[in-house]
Amino acid sequence: MKYKAAIFDLDGTLLNSMDSWDNAGKTFLENHNIVPPDNLNKIIKEMSFNESANYFKNSFGIKLSTEEIIKYINKIVKNKYVYEIELKPYIKEYIYKLRSKGIKMCIATELDKTLSKKALERLEILDYFEFIITSNEISAGKSKPDIYIKSMQKLGLSKEDIIVFEDSLYSIKTAKNEGFDVVGVYDKSSKKDLQKIKKLSNYFIYSFKEMEELF
Image 1 (cartoon, rainbow, N blue to C red):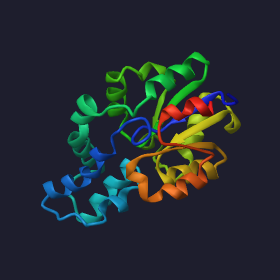
Image 2: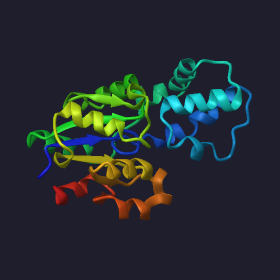
Image 3: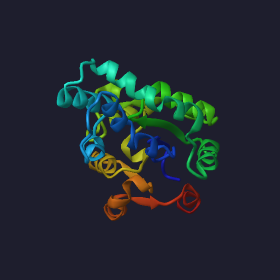
Image 4: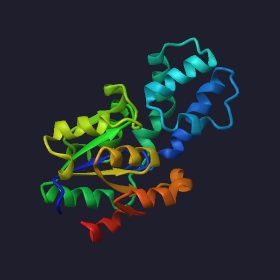
């Protein structure tokens, strides 16, 4: 394997969790007596948690601070991460394999760090990662390359030494445009972008079992 490190996204890449988020924004607005727009998920899909909270606040006149909105939405999905959400198939086997080969691994996610840790700890893989970095920490969503650059710096490696695993088209575009090699990971939430994802990614997998053939 030519790579020395791997940067993993969480939601939709390692975790089977996208369904949990599809209704979180809708539930938040409905709980504040606001009818959500039909295209809500499309609007907020490429936003960081912070950006989507600001969108709710500014677009709908929510009388809460950005931090309070984030806490509210985290509460909606918290129990799912703490008790329910599972890994995608063959994730553990692949992570164990990378660890045995001395490959460094980290998480770059738009998910809240506390929820990330709780889920990975329950799933017994938290200790396999060097660190978790979130979009909120660097105040930039994955439509900007900051999270990948920061991860690279913390790993102490160059772009050529790192492979990025992502499921969403906009994240794959960002990482590729910044010069990283990318494995596109299938998730049903990005099904409509499937052909674009396949074309843009250096590698594409429907399951992590396929990684045995790639690396």
